[in-house]
Image 1: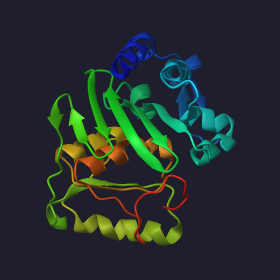
Image 2: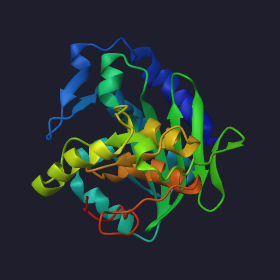
Image 3: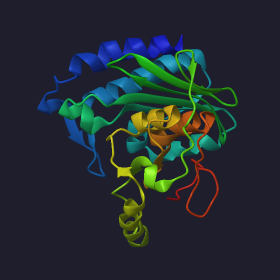
Length: 239
């Protein structure tokens, strides 16, 4: 049922606007990031549809948070909470590039229960269930577990680091085989889970950008941690 929600919303709101956006569809958020009329419409529709599945659940969406930062406290409630990134890779979408996705997760307090990353152009769904694995279709995903940095492919964030970390990131790049970004962290998480990529070193850890992918990566065998140890905690503001 939930995959059908992704499919229908994508078909109605996203695909008609792909490579068909107008200037009136584009805005800048308070942090100067791009947002489109499609992001807003998709998030609003997801809230309507997911509310039907869990009527008493809470929601935290990227665009809703822009309007009301206090909704982040929904994670602290003893209730189910949906996290929504209506279009991950908005810049790619605006430029007509193909790597963008819809990302959704369902959590209960500090536990991520399920997550989904959907690619509208291919209709491919990647999903994970806590303790049961990560999948595309019926195929279970598994990381490649490469431990040699000189053979590792992945990405390192270039923005939002403080000065100390910024210098460290520039130095770290030299240790890896390839460092490149997709401009869509959702697709990077999927490729890490499939063993096509090996790492992502990230700065801005907003929950809508990472809850869905973190669960998929974990269930495929990946490890996530802060520089000072500890798994990603979406209630924290750490880098």
